[in-house]
Length: 304
Image (cartoon, rainbow, N blue to C red; front, side):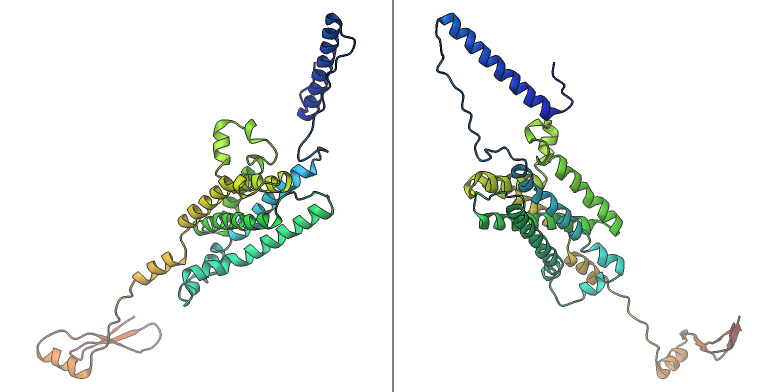
């Protein structure tokens, strides 16, 4: 009987029990067959992580989780903050193109996320002693694609939300699934089929496979092109669904203000009186609480 409340201890106990049963079975087979010593030895070899260190598995996946927190949450305030402050209209009338406005909003967050990535890489290699078996420049290049995917999702949230609190709630809807359904804690093979399909919509799922493949297995681009294509697809779809300032600018430009009514000249007023048309009434300044109106016939009317 094995206590399965702790899956790690239970799996280790089960493996030890199976190994002991296999050894006893081989000994009995040798005795019955008349062999004194069976020349059968098992020498398992662990590839890529021979010491079975937990840090080698968790820290490469930690990149995706930390960048999800910083990239999605920060980008979620890009547009909604301007809307709450009332400065979105000022951005609309600037001579900068809509693409320039979006890039100006997202490039600082991109630089901040990349600096965070470099810091985690430095701590991983120096403090936790996790080696990088693959190409470091390939990892940095694919990290840019992952950051663009996160920023596009944050921009989508920011363009749809009306307040900053709503943007925070919507951005947190990506954070918890990125931890639980991306393969960082639980293997994807252990998830039900609907959740496994849902996990493919998260950028963290694909970047965890990329980071672990490059750092642990030394994988190349040809081994990771499917994950890269998925990140590019998520980025393009999120950017297409997020309406930029151009849409709002076009709507504001299409609304034309009504023309102002000019006061007719004195000659036009006299001409209207001569042909029998009504001339407009004019309001004259008076005391507080009263309004004096002079009609076209010269009649003076006072109303409070």
